[in-house]
Image (cartoon, rainbow, N blue to C red; front, side):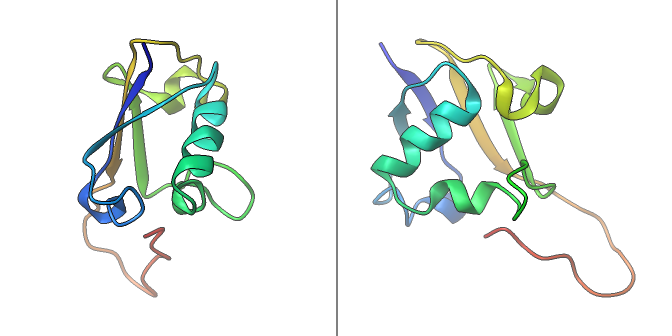
Length: 101
């Protein structure tokens, strides 16, 4: 078994168009490193320059927000489902935020 990762449309250019890919790791960080080894550039789209999960990206482990599970330290295991979703934001004032995509 592996970890199922659901990829949003905006990142599918990195996965050859696949909406679902498999990965491995003990933590979300491990999983993202594994995915980046298979699909170069994916990890950089999900993290800030300081290495934290980007605020405009939501990651869920088995329908639980990864940030509430420890962020990149969130435990993952075979059979888990990790969903990556772009955050939906409302209007803002000033300069637009930097998009991770």
